[in-house]
Image (cartoon, rainbow, N blue to C red; front, side, top):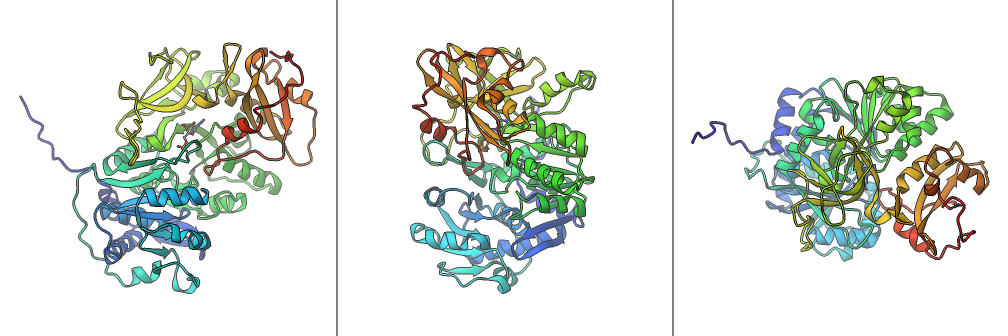
Length: 548
Ligand code: AMP
């Protein structure tokens, strides 16, 4: 029996920080904040302040394993909190400020946050909420003395004043690599939100895998702008990936959905790589089209969180020479699970064949084991046609939820994602639905995502949702709800005809309603649960839908 001779060095995030400071100390972090439209400093300066913050957290009485809440946009102070909490053995609990007040109350109490660090913009909201947060000892406003507001927050502190009082020397504690580092609650479209707790090890391994060339392709030469919020699954891990690989980091603060700021940041900071949900790219495209501006430095963007319509990919490539790469993941998978780049030879396929591949969410990244199963949990083939429930396992997939007895994994130890997909023989997964959103019509499954993608490809459509509505003969039929672009009009018939020849006749929506708005969850996803409730008694105009 031979034993390994390798050192057993724990995989902890403190090492990312120490490494980045030594090797990439002069790389820059540029941020937009409420009190400064363009803050700029180096990794060296950032990590010096992280040590001061580590001391400040001790002064505040935080102890190993305590949870520290953050309600903040993407900027340098939030980044400092990420690293100071992790290196101190505390848990950085990023709270999504867009949640309803009851959800915020639930999450902060359930997560047992000892202190809450919040952006200026959320002071009013938290003032109203604070009496319902008995475990929070006090609140730290992420600003300087000049911008510190009059506030009724109990034990209110000013972030910059807190830091200024502390030494930049610190002895970080040692702990096991399985020690918790951060926590994020799922957006919870059904039931209470559920907490996922990431460990140092899971976060570090996820960052290694995310940095690979066929994933984010991180490098010291890249200028990376994560637009995906840092309160949502660690900003898809980029806050670790970029310091690990030394690139310049650009953080858009509260301006993430604002086409003008995003365009300006790309051009002035020479951003090469970015990541965001599809709606952000739509906002940017609208801004570019109305102003005639360009984004010359930008080379590729990762899009995920929701299916990306082909139209976005096409416009970004053809007009702005930007590669849009589809990725899939979830809060429970840290988040990266699959990523879409072409395998050799795919460049030679026809445009139509290439488009079909681009629309898929991509291949599993190494470390993520993936399978699709039928209702009896039997594994289904990767034939590109058979669809089933997506199950995953791996070192950065959660096995349970925080303080929740309900099992997150099936009897074979796989995490049930709640997504439905098919996987082709090359390993590319295509998400067709959430399990709960699947439309079952006359024994056939219809993909609501495919129908939505096609609808938004119509030049007059701004946004679309497709839901299954009870039907006397077919169990359910798809109903399309579409928002038209400003100033556009069309008939239902014209809309439904758009599908003809593009998909099987029986899967064309049976009817269509034009609406002013569609309900969204706090993470910007369509809330189909609400739509199904709203349209559950929908009267089909024809008892025998023409398209069925
Ligand atoms: P969340 O935990 O809030 O990040 O939500 C995760 C869910 O978002 C997944 O289970 C999918 O249903 C959906 N999702 C994420 N990425 C994609 C994508 N690229 N295409 C379609 N759905 C996606």
